Amino acid sequence: MKKLALFAGMTLATAAGAAEETAVHQPEFWLEVQEHVVNNDIPQLLGYASDPSYTMTYLPERVSEGYLSFLQASATIGNFIFMSVVLIAILFAVFVLFNGRAKLENGFSGKLVDRWSPLDVFLHWLAAIPGVVLILTGLVIGAGRYWLEPLMSPSHFASFANASVMFHNFFAFPFIVGAVLIMIKWAKRQFPEAGDGKWFACLGGYINLGGGKAKHPDAGFANAGEKAYFWTVFVFGLALIVTGLMMLYPNLFGGVDKNGTLLALIIHIVSAVILGAFTVIHIFMGAVMSEGGMQNMLNGKCDENWAKQNHNLWYAKVAK
Ligand code: HEM
Image 1 (cartoon, rainbow, N blue to C red):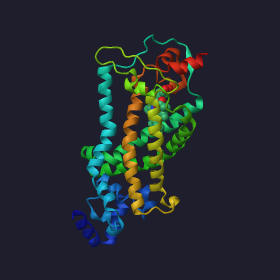
Image 2 (image 1 turned 90 degrees about the horizontal axis):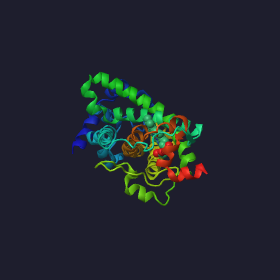
Image 3 (image 1 turned 45 degrees about the vertical axis):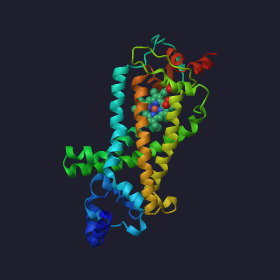
Image 4 (image 1 turned 135 degrees about the vertical axis):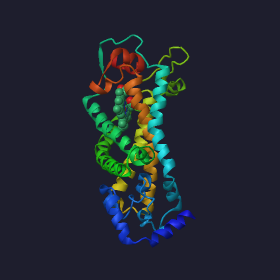
């Protein structure tokens, strides 16, 4: 009913008024998708949609009710996006504080083992640095209205949100190149193996709560947790890439219509929430949780004791 009233209001608004508002508020980079009109959905999240002229191009009879009502729940979407990044980061930080890091039992040996090639390290950061920018700008675009706007004036928030959209669209490209090459190049070492179930059953031996010193279970080049993250990147990363490109270049996909763009936006948001949460955990695991793990992605080499403790089956092979 509320929606009907909104659409009725829309038809009364003047086209000139809509054009004026459009010129003021719409993120510049999205002008080319005017017709297909993501920019009339995103403003809902950015807080512009209280002005009905923004929804001028909705033709009620041509737009799926289901998609529309999903996107109109912008506060719930914002909360999920916020939780997937900020809440997960806080929970994990508290966990590490109580549980402690996974220390190297025998300290650093000083002997280094080749783990990633220079190309692998380059590809990782080609995807990872833009990936972090995409998460942070996505957080502003999707949830900023609820936690950032109250901290600043509406016009500052509008500029900040528009800048975030520009950065989001720009950093998507290096991310796409890095992530797609990672998917192709690394997949062969990420398939499930016997022992992965056991790894999950004891959560990788990372849980030290209760005083006991957990032992890391057997693992090859990638442990079950790393494989799970790789396939999360593969599935939801691809979904993000395809739907993002559909929204930026609808014509490349045979002219995606309004419903197609709405569905693309929904898939984009759901995938971002899932991949965002797993990526926060991944960053904690790589940078904080596993002592000695971070250097693997800095110089491609790991300490021999790190290899024995975390990836014993792989180490046994390379040490031969
Ligand atoms: C500051 C952010 C990040 C840090 C500190 C980080 C750290 C690391 C480290 C240390 C490894 C090597 C683990 C090992 O040798 O076993 C790794 C692997 C990996 N990273 Fe990242 N990473 C970050 C962001 C990302 C992002 C945004 C992506 C998404 C594309 C990503 C995707 C991967 C994948 C697929 C692997 C291989 C599987 C795995 O080890 O989990 N990383 N990362």
